[in-house]
Image (cartoon, rainbow, N blue to C red; front, side):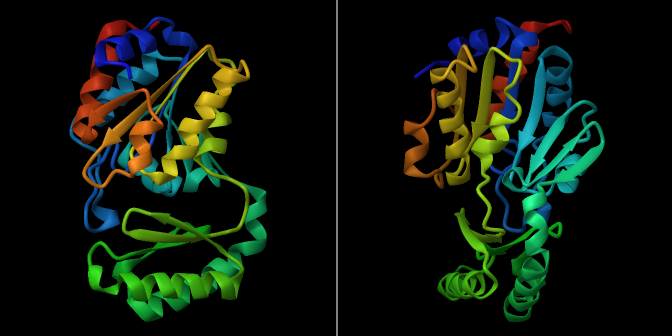
Length: 262
């Protein structure tokens, strides 16, 4: 395990050759009952702005739609990979993985069925690409919701992705945060990713693989821990921070250590 000092040193030794990537929910924004209420901690936007100016690349890799991320994090030069990499937003241009297209009607039908059963408050529409059923606001519907998600996935040919107190229905294509992270690494020597949940484990694994096969000289895997963190998280990372506040403090140290834009 690295301590905070060693982590800062690793991320500031070659700033213009470093790419910093982060999850959003549970990493830069506290977990809240209603997904639409999840805003970044105070100071996150300013800190990301400083890092964009001082590092080679900074991007958000999240399960959220890129439109939501860009609204919550209005930082010029910040790139976004949303919906676990099925969406991208860079230089103001949104793109969607073309493999999603054949499943748009299936996603729309599953969304309609889920909303009819659980209501809009518990069913999140993610652009026109996927949907998530949340039981955090109503824990008593967990088993019913899981059963419904399984049935809708089977009926409409979608895949299930289980996260914190939620299940996402999405096109059954081979893409995850690991693939999204890989797409940001070209041309850099040092790569870092911060995440807090099961969906972030492929991102950590991709960084380790990138070092093993020579695409990166060094990787820094930052686990943002909480009482809800999966057991595998700590085993998959190089350093841990105490929730989003801990990650923000670490990122501020990185920005301050570089001091001036390179």
